[in-house]
Amino acid sequence: MKTIIIFATISLLFIAIGLAISKYRCYWLISGYNTASKEEQSRIEIEKVAMHMGRMCYLIALVLFIGGIVTNYTRISIFPVTILIMLIVFGYLFYLQRFDHNKKSKAETIVFIVIAFITFSITIITFSYGRETNEIKINDKTIVIDGSFGTTIKKSEIRNIELVDELPKISLKVNGYSDGSSIKKGDFKLENGENVKLYIQGKSGPYIKISTIDNEIYINYKDKNKTIDLLNLLE
Image (cartoon, rainbow, N blue to C red; front, side, top):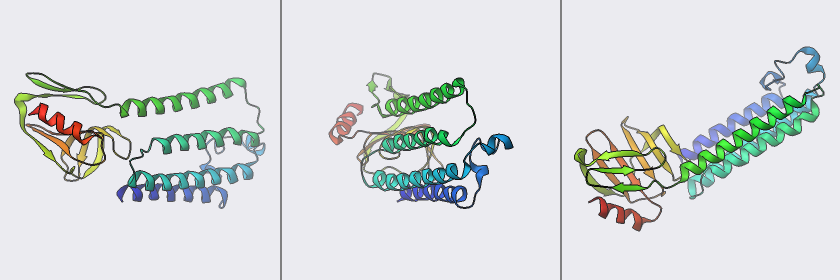
């Protein structure tokens, strides 16, 4: 439910921005238009730009709201929602160029395309890297969690290893990766203010809880049997 509330709030914000631009003529919200000279502004069909910008905001709001419901009640990650929103934004930005009759150099067009491509590529790479399962390596003295946001646990500092059915309530991602659904990696903060490390692949338990002198680490896989097998190795 918390995920839906967050997505709904952001959706309402986009609706408000869309209304402000298209209905109440808050053109200063349109990036680039408010910094253009009066002569340049006169060569922009601002009413049409505002209308389409409003539609873009409404469409993003709809995608976010539906995405929040889907990711909250299913195992589908937020990744497809992010990609769809990026496609909507870049698609509209390219389309809106037809209403700007100011001359643009080829260099400006190329720069815009390159920035769009780089942004899209970084998003794809980040999600792909973040979704990879961390490999667990166990030796005589340490437990090494390889991969993104990995860590090394000294066996001498471990106080307890147990299997739990539920995760404590998470309030904040401090330094890590989360797809908004099941996958969580790295440093997170609990609602009680404590810091934990999460290496979670499945949306439900069981979870391996490793309590050390300084921290608590939670690990699990989508396959419950794989989680149990790892626990047996750790013990």
